[in-house]
Structure formats: C-alpha cells, structure tokens
Image (cartoon, rainbow, N blue to C red; front, side, top):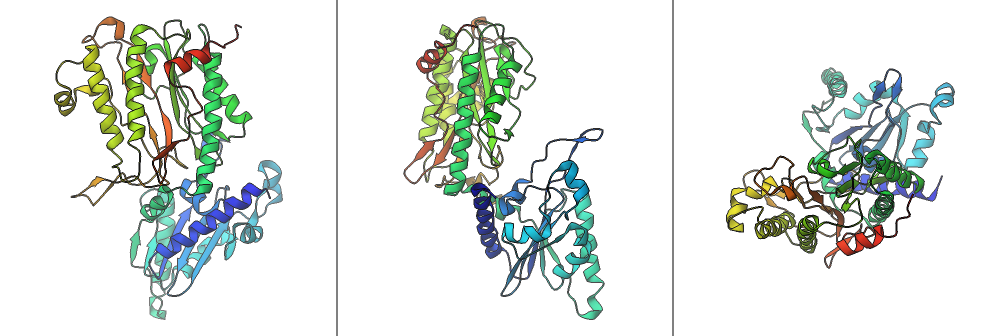
Length: 449
C-alpha cells in the first residue's frame, strides 16, 4: 500500500462517519459503485468509479455496493465487493476481496457481492428510511424494491419494513462542495500538471500543426506526470472552431492569423482541473484579436476578484457580463446603453454561457448554486473551501452579419480554477500565462521544427 492510498481510505472513513451523523436514525443508505460500460463488442471503456462512491470509500473496483446503517445508538458500514477469483485476476488484475477490504477501507464488515440478496433484507429490517437514488438505474431500482418486498413478507413475524425513501445525494453533495486541505492539495497537483500541458501545447503550436497533434501534447503531459486521464474531452479549437463552445472534433489544421482556444485539464487521483487559454498561432495577436482578448481578460480578472467569502456565487458572472457588454459597446459590436443591453440579453450573441461552475471530483462538480428553496431561491454565498472555475468569453460567429468582417470567427475564452479562502481567493491554475505580453513572450521561445 502506498502512502497516497492509505490517506485516500482514511479520508473516506472520516467522510462516512460525517455522513452517518447526518443520516436520520433507523435509516439505511445504499450506494452502488459504477458499472463497466461496453465500448465495442467485447471491450469496455476504461473504468472510472462513481464519484459519490469514491468519495465515501476510495474503492476503485466495479461491481460493489456500500451500505451505511444508522440505528438508534450505533452505526454500521458494510461493503459488498467482488470475491477473489484467480481466473479473473489472471486476465484483468488483482481483486481486493471482502477479507482484505475490511482492513483496507476501515469498515465494519465486507461480503461477496454474490451474497447481497441474502444480506440486504436483514440489514433493511426494522429500518424506517432508505436513502437511495431512485429512478437513475432500473436494475438497481428493481433490486432495492425486491429487498424491501422480502422484508414486508416478514410482517407477521413482527418485522417492520422501511416505509420511506429519500435521496442521499443532496447531503453528500453539500459535503463535497467544501474541500478539505487534502482535497485542495490533489486539486493543486491536477492544476499544476494541466498548466504544464497548456504551456507545452502553446510551444508546439505553429501553422501546419493539427488540432489533434496539440491534443496529443496535452495527453502526453497528463500521463507523463501521473494523471490518470483527461478530466473531460479536450477542446482544441483553432480559428472559427473556437466559436463552437464544446468543439471536440479536433481535426483541423492551424493557420497563421488564427487563434487557438484550448480548454483542457487532467484528472489526478480522481480530482479535476479545468483550464482554458486562447493564443495566436503566429505567436502575435492581431489588432482585433488583442482588442477582444483584453476585454475578456479584464472581465476574468474582475470576476476572480469577486470570488470571496460572503459574496453571492453569481456575482462573478454579473461582473463579467457588465465588463464584456461595456467592452463590446466601446468597440462597436453592440450599440446602446450597456445596462439596457444587459437587461435585454443582447450580450448573449457574443457571451452565451455562465462564468463558472463548481470543480472537484467531477469537472462540473456537485453542490447547489442557490439556497432558500424553490420559491425563495437566492444565489448562495461563497464559503472557504469551495472551488469554482472563472471562464468568461467572447465568440463572434463567422455568420454574424451584424458586425464588421474583421471581427467574425474570433472566439476567446480564459478560464482558471479558483479556491475560496478565508481572506479571499487563490488561483490554482496561475502556472499558465494569460496576459498578451506573457503569451507572446512564451511563444517567442518556440524552437523552429
């Protein structure tokens, strides 16, 4: 066992204990692991554990179920996992097995997943409430309902079946929203690797190189530095492709005079980074590119400044929207008073997405953005330990005939990962140049191929 894996399981044990304290008495939580997904014929996609399951176990095998039981005075943590199987292990790797899982995961007991149908009804007996994600997986819905029905059939023997179901996701997701020091360290590692990858791609960029070759540069740095994979499909968008927000075709060839927008980040120990940088293929921004870029950068820096404890989570977006709208008016791409244009939503022709999202084990991480209920919802305030992206952009569609031709086909986004601290914020991804002078200086060091 490595030091990292010990920490992973210890952290998960602390989270389980915290979750058990939040569960109602006489309740049981059932959390299945992720399942293998077929890629083609008899091959599967690389397995990636369900995020909530990983958060509470650190366990990375499929075909497993975590059960948490809270009684009146005591609690139990039970894992069902694959049994040891020499033949399977020969082909796909060593399995932990129930016996080793007890000590490794610091849980009360573990059983073979083949025993789950006989064990679960007993665990559910005389409980009032089941925490379970109903409606997400028909197979598991059928399983859970079957176990409940088994308990109901024991009513004449005085056994009570659970009568309520509830989603445990909101409880777990609020826990996941506030990152611990250990989580922040992992996210910083993911950010550092991703920053190096972006710099590597910048240095590899020149006319004639393809988008997929830049994607390969990113991938090389991710894996070479110990990351498990990209945290999401890398966006490498040159020229007008940058005006497609989630462009992932990555097949075009770079041309002098165009910009390249790269939105990419790695996953390290299940934690994601998410960075976007936009830079010129030639190494020098044109006049129009510079003008739009400076607006986006100004908006991003101001939005980052708005990330601080107590500020509403939607304040960065409001700040960025105002600055982008004012900048577009100043350049003549929008006409009218900025306040009116914002009210009318006119800026959405150029800036059509939000300015940020939570980041963590998932790229678009969990946790509510508003509090106060459906009828009285307000943007929740930032708290220390939250991590958000800040990513304003301007996209001038190639077919936008409302603006002069010189602006068309320019797409710019700048994105960083920002940790909320007690005194303000800390940018985790500041290892990548983002001012015009910094970018041009880095690209000037490129070696001619």
